[in-house]
Each structure stands twice: as structure tokens, then as C-alpha cells.
Length: 378
Ligand SMILES: *Cc1c(COP(=O)(O)O)cnc(C)c1O
Image (cartoon, rainbow, N blue to C red; front, side):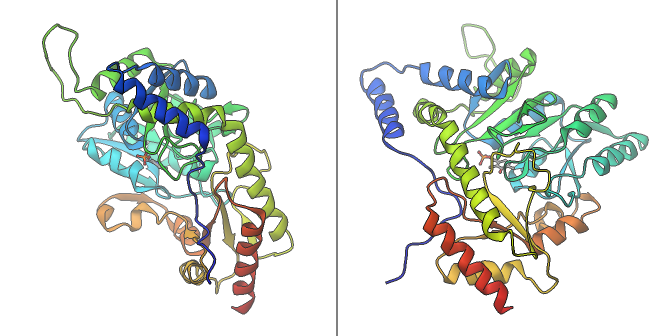
């Protein structure tokens, strides 16, 4: 009999979430839709991120899209982002008609190289291009280098939008993920650290940005008694059942973070005496990650991440290569990339390991045992 598959990242939902979801349905059955759950979830996320406002939305992608529109992304403008990211970041830029410019990673944690990004901004500005925003991504739960990015972008008058989709609960120099620059975006997709089974949040201190996003998310209805629309809107609001699940998850956030951190420490302990294996972002040792996914990079020229994924898959273990860089994606073949070799190398030699908060010690041991056995056989 084969053991069940050890998944990369599954939802950690229990009786509290089930009860919250059921209660939210009872409210509907009673003929009253109580939107209190949404407001409560917005207040809760605002608190965790230290931001004044939060807008609950249908997805992280929707949150990116609305923030970019407000910041002025449109045809003819440029938006700088990391090449090493999930397609959602780049897609949201494309939805606005703006041109994404992809920037290479830094080696330590695969996040965008902040100096390269600022140099690229200077060159674009010198060419007379309008940069609507820069969207650094907090990869796998570790914040981008905002100590360089935030002052550098402010100096150049470029709005900063944090793609914190993967980094709820993380921090950089003591400041919460999502709180840098003009606005931040979170995702509560099923595979994220905290899930509403699909949803997102936009956080900001900017009252105008938040009011505009709320309006755009509800078909941009004007504040008059009839249905009046002067700009193009969307249907991007979060459902109230999702928010109810989110509230139950948020009450467990410390527990969810501690579980992911314990998994990170478990892998780090096992790989401490495997010199070719480096845990991404571990060197800084500042403890600011939320440890959403533990990622390794194998320092061995013969290592082939795709082959490792296939070998682990055959053992019932779901590992995954790091994000395939956007500049290698056929859909973005015509986009500009600044550098890119480092992201390509990370894609070839990097692996995300099973990191669910429900992962057991014996499952973690099995992942390490199968992976080291495969590495030794190479
Ligand atoms: C998950 C994710 C998103 C998109 O969030 P959805 O809620 O799935 O739309 C955006 N950016 C990054 C980096 C992500 O990992």
C-alpha cells in the first residue's frame, strides 16, 4: 500500500472554521446577510499589518489590479516588478495595459535585487518613461529589501505597492509585511498560510486609495440614489462566508505561523550537515519570515530541480521548482527584463519543499530522507 501524498501546502482548517462557515450560512437563511464578518476581517488584517485601512476582495490578484489602477497604471506606463514571482503579479499589471518590466533576483532569498530595480527605474526615467509603480514581491513569506526599496522609490517619486500575497505575518526590520509604501496586497488562496478558500485584501494608510478601491470593487457605483457609473468597475468583493472563515483563521494566526516556523527549523536541522543544500533566506537569520514555504537551493552543477521534483513525485512527495521567471514565460516573451540570469539559475536549482502547517514530523523526516537519498545517488 502506498502512503498518502505529502502535499506542498494544504489548508489548515478545523472545527472553528467549519463552525464559522456554518454560522455565516445560517445568517443568510434567516433572511439577513450580516456583513459584520467582512468588516471584522478587514479590521483584523489592518491590525496585523499596522495599516489604517483594509479592503476585503475576491482575490489577491483583484487587490493588485485595483491598487495599480488607482496608482495610475495604464497603457503607456511602466510597472517594475520581480521576474521571479507567480504569474498573478505580472498579469495584474497587464490587465491595466501597463508594460511590466521584470527585474532579476538577489541570491540570498530570490527576492528582487533592489539596487538593480532602482537602476532600472533611473534608466527608464532618463528615457522619459512614466513609471506608475514598483511591485516587489515578498517571496515565499520573506519580505523584499524595503530598507533599500522604500527610500529609493520615494526619492524618485515612484509609488510602491507590496505584493505581500505570500507574507502575511512576516516582518522586515520590525515592520509588518504589506505596510511599506503606498499599499500592500495579501492572498487567502487555498494554498496560502491563512486561507478563506479564495480571497484577498488590500491594505493602506491612504484614505483616497482605499475609497477608490472599494468603489471599483463594487462596479464603481456613484454615490447617488440610482445606478450611476462614470468609470469602469469590477465585481471584486469578498463573500461574507469567506470572511467568516478568515476570522476563524486569523484567531489561529500565531499557531499557523509557529507551525510553519517549526517546519522550517526541522528542515534546517536536517540539512545542517548537507553542505550542498542551502535554505533560501536563512542566512539573514533575522526571523522575519512567515516561513510559508521552505525553499532550498542545491549548490551542485549536476543538480536538476525538475528531475528532483519528478523523483519525489514518484515517492508520493509534492515538491515544486521555484517560480519559473516571468521573462521565460511565453505569454511575456515580448516584455523587457533587467538581468535575469540569477532567477534562471534559482529556477534550475531551487525547490519548494512540503511546508503545510499540518505536516507531521514523520512526514518531514520522510521528505528529507527521500531527498537526501536521491541527492546521494546523483
Ligand atoms: C497567490 C499569489 C498572488 C495571487 O493571489 P490570488 O488570491 O491567488 O489571486 C499574487 N502574487 C503572489 C506572489 C502570490 O503568491
